[in-house]
Image (cartoon, rainbow, N blue to C red; front, side, top):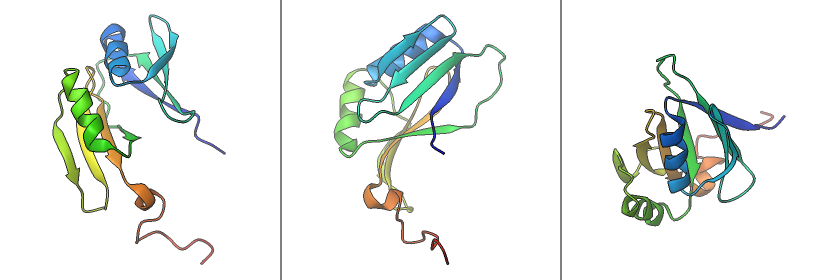
Length: 126
C-alpha cells in the first residue's frame, strides 16, 4: 500500500490556490471546488477541497526540504508570514511553521536520515 495524497479543507479556493502556487507547488487540477498540486520534487501530490462548513482542521501537513533556511527566506520575500522561524527541535528535525489562508498548519522541515531512522526507531522483526 502507498499513500496517494492528502486533501486539505479550504474556505476560499482562490486565495488557497494562490498561496500554494506562491509556495512553489505546480497546480495540476483547477475547479471551483477542488484543486490538486504536484510537489516541486518527486511525484507526490496533495489537494484542496472547498469546505464552507466552518469546521476546525487540526491536521498538520509536512513538506521536507534540505535547504530549509533558504526556502523560508525565499517564501518570506514573496510575502508569506511564518509563525515559527526554522528551529532545531528536540526530535532531531529542523522546522518552520506557517498557516495557509484557511488556517491549515504547515510545517516545512528537514530531518535527513532521522526522518526514517531516528535513534528511537522501533526494531522491525524483533
